[in-house]
Image 1 (tube, rainbow, N blue to C red):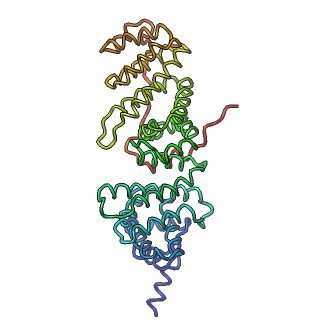
Image 2: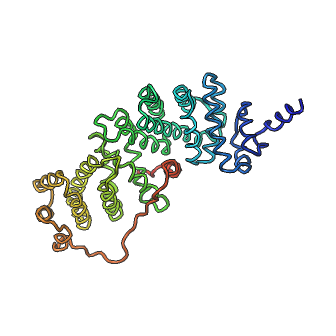
Length: 405
């Protein structure tokens, strides 16, 4: 009897938890974690303890997958912990254990349903928790995709489970929260990269693509956010460039806006992003994205020809020639040469570039486009190695781009 009383005392409040064993005990008796207790809990547990608690949550969730109320309590405890911590390693610890449990298919379905449809009791932190709910489901989808790729015969009905996750994630895409929008762009963009038919990604971008792009490029040219925005765009812009023609119109409008608003910094972005597109990656061929980007460069060159911006024209021509090994590069140059809306002087330089193997020599030889800018060059920073959770959480904190009346 005394042992039972001691157990009840220890697990009466999460604030009383001092070890991983006590945290697991609190989970086992159905004690829901509250946001206000998280600071004390984290201070009492080592990092390894927290990883073990995540694994324990996964095991108990699978064991109680047939008990809806227990699943909701466990899920809210998980989401509060993850949303407070914003630590990808904790998510990985939970999911790695989840994928070792025999009730994985049932757990996937229930976890997605609870995280994205059930109201939580933490009303003061709804945004943080819902952002984490979407992020967790995205990670769950990635895990399922990679697991099936590595072990194609180990789990039946993977396509049904993936479609289950996609349907629930798409159902929250009408949100105004940019952190969630950026998570969804990354999720569907990654999973449907290279696919001829993009079942979800095109619909997603049609829903909020223009405002998401506008926000990203606004953040790219703000000092506080440029490095993270650059990292996100480098990773996800190739997916966007694979989308259908209506989405490319959104991309062109965004490019044109910031080309004219931030000419020097946008020109630098174009050069850096072009180098990124031409880098070879083992799992993702960006050739289709590069071909589409070439079309955007040609369209932007027409814009700078119209406004007669010589420095931008030089930059765009130089960048265009970075893609000279692609057959479509010559095709785009030929179209520009035949376009009477492009200034005759610009067309003449393009003709010389098409026939030369030394683009910079041609541009330097042209008095029209000779570089005359002196002094320290512009720099765009990039936060390499920053995980997608950190990226979308950081970028999602900024106010929406201000509208001009």
